[in-house]
Image (cartoon, rainbow over all chains, first blue to last red; front, top):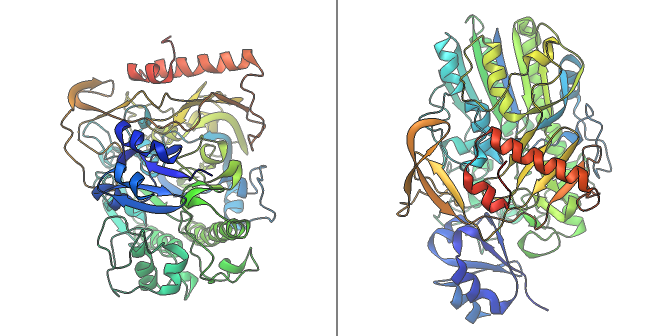
Length: 63
Length: 508
């Protein structure tokens, strides 16, 4: 079963989206309520858990 | 003529007995004071939000601008003619009484400076107010915070842990008179009493309640649930999103509890709104005061599989807001004509006998009250910047999606953040000078990604308040007509050319 991957529009671009694609379908939201993380890191919420890294490709590698 | 505007944030109209809708609440939500005001006032049956969410709505009310077609959540612009400044020009004394902390947060400036008096009750939601004690109450943290994402000892922006400290400082649970709505409406009464000898007054009471966190004192916390409202396993501050997946996922038990706490907060807010009505009674103010009561938007509580706002299609639970207007000269019990949030700006100025700026996107509602007009608008556009653009003609709503791959331009004299409004603004190195219809001054134009709230058009009859019967694809004639309404509405507002491109619409 593919994980649920949520991202904030403020936090990723098309390259980041492509980097997360191997994990599954990425849903984007205008704001996920993690504004400080959004300011400082790349992040995704994977199956409800916040995952941060210096870039989105690293998030994919962590999973 | 005095003017009193009261906004109650996130107040869904379907919980009010003045309206006929009731969506899924298995109990009647008690609002005796809003009910008694509705008895005195004219009830607007077909009132719609314009720009969403919180601060975009407030720019519509304060400046009369249908903001979302040009920019998102941001400051008052230099070209805006602020309602309090207009009132001041007419010799009115003005006051803003609020616990709406966004006014003093990144992303929203210029809203309070034009009032003669500003009373701000600090501490709601993420308000950067109390920093002690360093370790907030664990039980309230359990109900409001995921410690992994909002570390209680973190110093970052927009940390949910702030609320636990603020609420403890306000002793919200100890006594309902300490709650934010109580404090806000009490200060409003105090201001009205203390300034009763001023001849012309404009007062805006902006209650952040019913907004989350849905943290309410007793008896309201237990009014609509048999659960222990202080059970650390039960959330009072849901993340926005789908209720069936991701960080916003809620069990049936959790969702029922959230709904009960929302309902409790509605009843609590109503109780303190009632004190304001009592004050107007005491002062004999009804014969010399236009009183307007409304909300900025609703809040989804599991309907359509969503909790919150911003992400989903702009269903009527979010967009079709309550509006009650009392005018000393009277008015009909109910008005079915279409009205829109932006209409409150010229309505208030009209009531003050102040000039109404030509560039406003609103129309005064006073002719509807006096019987001099049967309608003031044929259509109303509403939505979020960079997302779907929606239209209603008072009979149907048509929700038109954006192409998420087509960016949306932001137009502002500032380099505000198009996304991430609570954060410090960052330089927009790609910004270019541009022009917009509201001003001869140049503005910045810069782009950000668009957000697809849905993939295909949606069409609903207003009779279907729950909006469970999507008529798109079933009635081509109505769909085509509403699409034309949208194009006509965009043309009337002289919307940016890029709007047609990202909506894949032919310009009329």
